[in-house]
Length: 114
Length: 114
Image 1 (cartoon, rainbow over the protein chains, first blue to last red):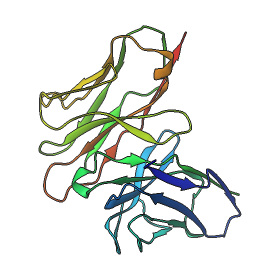
Image 2 (cartoon, rainbow over the protein chains, first blue to last red):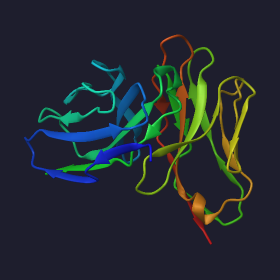
Image 3 (cartoon, chains in turn brown, green):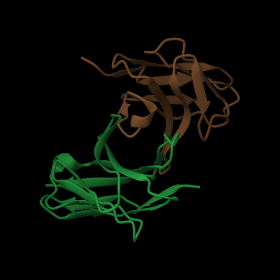
């Protein structure tokens, strides 16, 4: 089945530790996105990538980093510099950036940092 | 900058009731407009879209009409079911070349009771 996989579903970390969230897609999509979802805040774009080896900052990139070494993978690292990392993180992809409204979302990873 | 404003929830309705979720936007030009739905514990799914003024998007009994004069894209359904319980997000994509980033509203939680 084609789709987007995010793992793990729940992740717990201690404050001060970096943590990497996985996102894999087998849809052969060029573009991938990372969003953060907080209660009552909707979705906010962290980073996006239009093509392999290229990525751009979104609205709230501070404290996060990404890589896009393979078309199917777009991991997100939440660094210790992120002040409020506890949130629900959603990864998405679209066939081409111009099709960004046709974004396919993964099931999300809920990160809790204590 | 661009923004999307949705009616605050939660919204609780009885089965077979009529649903309206208001959405207004601020953007220059003619953005594309979308409704996404998020079922509990899942990522977002595109529900419907409209790409120009007076377009009506529809899917699964839901409808929304792009009203340029009132900058609105209200979501409606004539008879809701328990299975429609979810969070609904209104979103826009700006017009213009290279404008691929989506702006989401904060979401409206709908609960339908039998």
